[in-house]
Image (cartoon, rainbow over all chains, first blue to last red; front, side, top):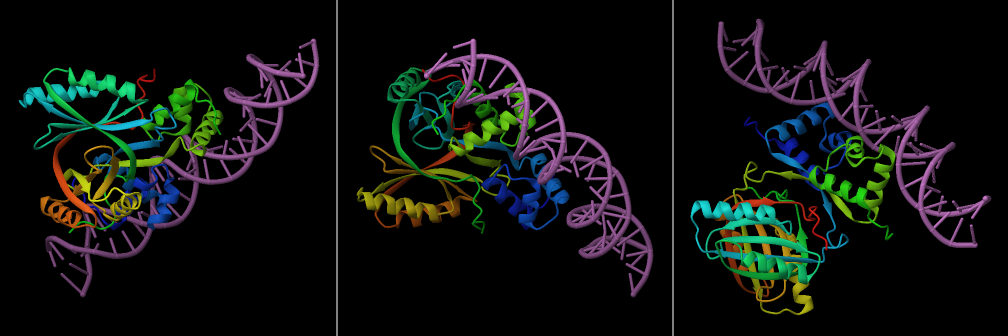
Length: 158
Length: 158
DNA sequence: GGCGGAGGCGCAAGATAATTGCTCAGGCGG
DNA sequence: CCGCCTGAGCAATTATCTTGCGCCTCCGCC
């Protein structure tokens, strides 16, 4: 399973991060091989889990979600079971779109969207009242100035 | 351009957020219409900018980026020009994958990846020394417990 | 130096999907 | 009641995907 990722694979990954719906024909031309091996490489990258999936990027504001905010959560207990219990609860809140467990001061940081401030306030009240939550600090976003795919493709590896 | 988004469109958007590479034939079956109108709706949603693009989701750890962290940045000046100057600089740092301008205490929050702690430390030094930066607080992530697409599809609109 | 074997490419053909033009049904306003 | 507009479905064409196969290259091993 630990195939070596060569330069062609990196190019494939870059192109697919940039446009996940590119046709395989177009992809193969951009990376300089013919279509069949291109498709086989993509399939292999999917098999290995290097490509985890594909996603359409939507404009949340145009769909009525005008507010985006972070919520920093401190828990009462950081016992293993309590952490996973909180993470499970986070899965069930639709307004939470992403969540990271942190080291240090804050236990979790939640990226949230909401149609308006009132909805978000209601959610924060629910969050604050959730089991094991000690306190919550929120920060409203004014705008997102960068939204790049998770893997840098500008040669940052040492 | 302000077409009304009906139930079929919402279903299309849900499916494409879930799997951006689904074929149009499969998509049309899932949303209950035939292929041609399905494709026309997708094209329309793209035209209107509701669908901003498509992206492959990669596993950053398998590609050598073992560290993910947040950096909270306080600036010296919050003048319009200074904010955009900082945002421009953020565009040029490959390790920064997403960036939001915040209201309140912190001015910007940066989501960063790096191959290892050393690389991240070097980046933080650079960030701290950048023009107009007053101070930087960082928080390493232990793990990401949720990574959903940006628009909720679980009926959260009022 | 020559002999395999494995890996990976490209060609070609059949299957599947995308795309376009056309027709038709339903809802709305005149 | 009639015509128009919107949007669906059908059918045909074009493009893409997918698979099987042969070939070349790179190694390791005789």
